[in-house]
Length: 273
Image 1 (tube, rainbow, N blue to C red):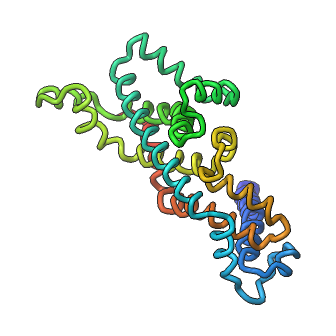
Image 2: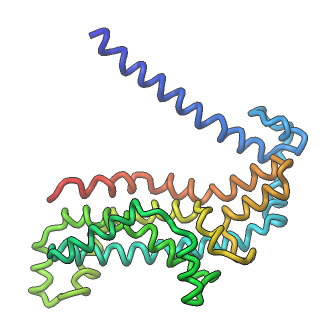
Image 3: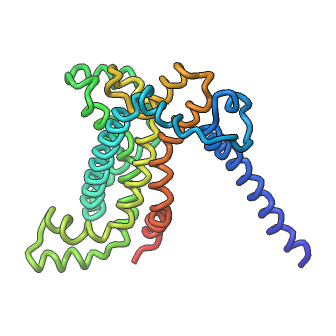
């Protein structure tokens, strides 16, 4: 009995140590963002002698954050919209008609989870289509990259939606896509929220793909501005910290408000019925 009680205590201690390991650098970045340049050079978790809120103003003006914020909102919003619509529709078609062809298509799509991103063929294809360096090219690439995981989640959740609803809809004259959008899609709200939030975080924080697909600074997303801002102010840790806080805040807020939906959506389709 005594030995069994030790394990929860050990696990609790490990969790506290892990939490502190995460909290310490986070607290240092937040506090540093309000310090003067001299105080920020010490890179400590000490409380600032006075709060310099003008650091955030400097970041917004000199870092061209407003345009990058609009770019990130537009690219992320449309990417998530396309991912949700296409993945949900495709999952409905595949899971409601388990033919050999549909099962093969599903396996091909899930291969996208392990397929690496090939920058050169992607750029060449976009140039051939005359859309390289445009917003639509970035949105299409994000949609193609993240649709595989979204389709897998929607397909798993679709198993918990009774087929009797389809039959009832057909009796009422609702056939095909109207059946999906009017009857089935509202029932997919938990997994829809989960897919939306996860892809919002992934697309919002993505740095690698815009680096290859964006050739104009006016189209930069927020992660690219952080990279550029660090190059200009690599010694001003207070400004760099403020820049990182601004970029990460929308994702943190979205996750805090929607974390319960993420968990419920990931587990709701685990049990059929």
